[in-house]
Length: 467
Image (cartoon, rainbow, N blue to C red; front, side, top):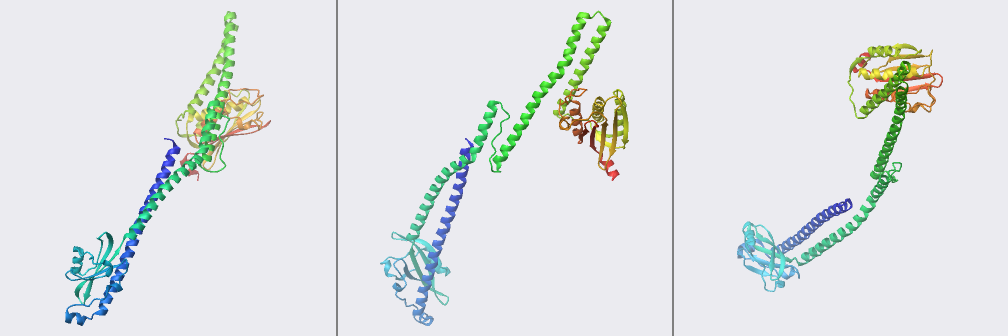
């Protein structure tokens, strides 16, 4: 069953429940009101008859003669009001002329009312006429002399209730039919944007074109937010697929050079392998190419593990030992570049020592590669109130402003550099920084050098001690 049908059925069902509940409540209240009004009018008429009887009789006459004089009841009766007076034994003493010789029923309820001196309401049938009957006791002092019975046909009330019931039933049916038709139209209008979204999504899938975007309705409703969310998802998917394409191309490009070197030197060994010098040079070239391939594969594996959610071995550690190890290892790479240990504040952080060393070695190696002979690279540590900053500053050629925002992207390399790398070192460094809840930023001015700054949160106990 489609959403359109389900929404229509839910809407009509809810409206049906509301209309039926309203109709039942309205019919019940109307029936109660009409019956109550009729009962009130019967009570008033019975009171008038009682007052008329009291006007014809005094308590002394009743006690002296033992009977009461009754007025003519046609004074109190109308065409639709019937009056009857009975004595304490239930015998009819007088009836209104419109009864035409028929008696109002004197049943067990009426006789119980005589005994208990309580008025009685009941619905009875006289001949073919259904009427509401009110029987009220006639009292002289504390003595019950009889009862006044007032009857009124309820045919008009029944007819009124039947007309109202017919109106409610027919009105409910008509309202539900109109609601169903209107609901179908409203649901169609409401779901039309979803159909457009579905059609556009199908076009995107069939055409395999992630550049397309869904139309965003001008209203800021759920559908507009859904369209924007899907467009954002498509944009991220497009970026992901583009990154995958670039990754495949970059990996192929990076592997092609060392493979070419290995293939060329293998050919040399086959043709000129008798010469020790040639063999040594070829083997050195092959080893260098293999090392380059191994580093590339290792970096790619690390980034792949990072994307899969690799967990680091986090523990409290002193940065002093990490910084000294990095500084010592960097001396083997300096290649004529002066290494300096600048400001060095003691600091404790929560992190993975091996990964932090890898990050800083990558920064130091990157700085040394792009600093000419005679230049310098400075490693410094600055502790703040709740964080520590580790900076690696060089005096190299610097990075142009248009390249600076992209240097942490995978396989991104600045064109024209004298030293070329795989383009993965800074991407790995950035991931390690973020895995430690830190940041890695770069500042550079062409011709003046670059500064890479790693910011890490201090260990809480040291941060509290510093305060």
